[in-house]
Length: 108
Length: 115
Image (cartoon, rainbow over all chains, first blue to last red):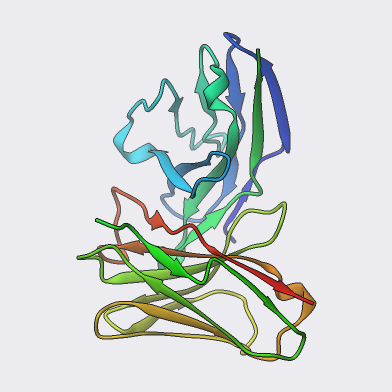
């Protein structure tokens, strides 16, 4: 079975505080994990993918196969980071399996 | 480049009716995927097409069908609409189905409301 869970529907942090958006997955095989972001009134867009181990807009995510997790982290949250964040797994047949999403609200 | 374009942007239909949603991929992209996003949930995979052939199908009833044209644009058709079909329908394109590195590029979606 392939499944993505994001336990928090809403996460509120103050500007400058660290933020961690949790993502856990279940998948038989070598997973490919992604984070997508949707800012208000904008389309869903790719934030980062585990395969490239990059940092985008200060966000990083490390694939932990032992814990089957791919948490998204940023050391200092900014107000412009407020958005919906979706963790996604590239499943069998190359389609994406998305988690339910976490709404991040960065308070001033 | 116009990106992935979808039409119409909004649509209201009555239960039992049929609807056709359209998607034009990014130039050079040959794979199109359709997703349904119900309010408050993440997108759910419906179909993937590559080179005009169906390459994947999600867990949706046969009322849902799709096709891809020679120019790689795509249509999603839904027959006998139900209230539960109300959702944002997203189209995503990629160069090919594998696309290990870059993921997909999504359109803005079509908001379908069934009344």
